[in-house]
Image 1 (cartoon, one colour):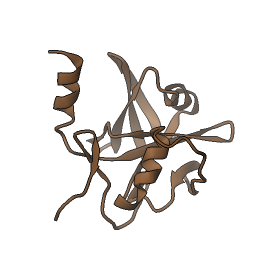
Image 2 (cartoon, rainbow, N blue to C red):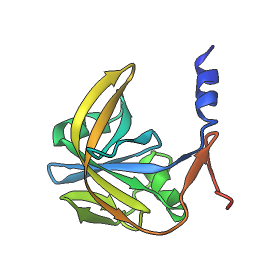
Image 3 (cartoon, rainbow, N blue to C red):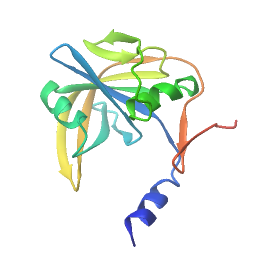
Image 4 (cartoon, rainbow, N blue to C red):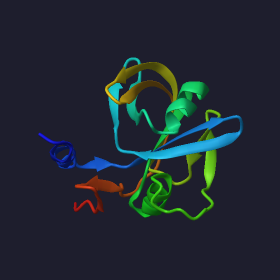
Length: 153
């Protein structure tokens, strides 16, 4: 199989959309990601997957902590900004949780300290130990076949 077939198959799995954030030397860094999952309840662990060429990789390694911000349907533009699809500078409103920048009005802000990391293929898998969570009601931003989608209830 070729790379396109593999990517198309992975695109058949509908996901939510997150922005991973961290802070290093007083500067906030973030990237859009949909490679996120729950790992364990005891201890409370989650997993994110970061590509070897992503600038966020070394930022998380150096800071030792990160937040996962689960985006609402109203935050599609924020997703596009952190994915590099919108080039112009726009102000993002961050709040603070567990000394991490988190995106205001996300459905969930999940703060983590790096618990472990594994290099697999061209990605690093970060296992995060959850240190705090804030939840809000709303409709999630969904992603399917390379496009943002509406969830029909």
